[in-house]
Length: 160
Image (cartoon, rainbow, N blue to C red; front, side, top):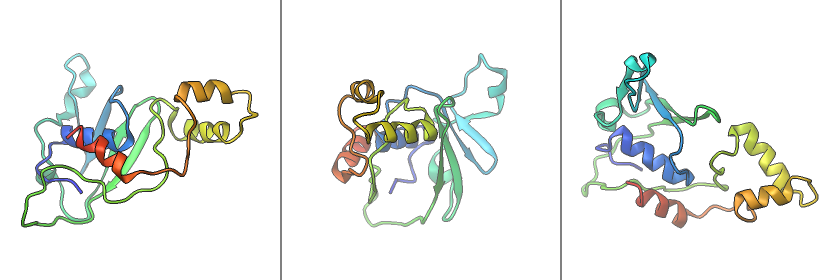
């Protein structure tokens, strides 16, 4: 659940918090055929990239809208996002909030979907030759079925 008053830039940080990623990589939103992100004057291609700092969610989206968020153009994490509803609440929502979830979040720089699948296979098999290095890289054991709503909301709250 996110306030409609959030800019796309702030919404990007909410997503980063939800995944416990560190915002190391480029990203962009595509909404109704237009691209939003952080314009870079050094790239001619970015002439069509609209500044995410200017646009707020309530200006761009309506109930049942669907859009994409891409993070890390190398790993190419594509998030399909659907607006389930737009509610007017008596008390204005000031910060984003995760209502539910499942399974562990993929680590930053794991290699996208295929890299994460490989990571899960290695972490599930202590006899795998990559296991020790992967555990070290990960910073410890990985529990793929673990989800903590408290932790996710803590990460989201710290970023928006």
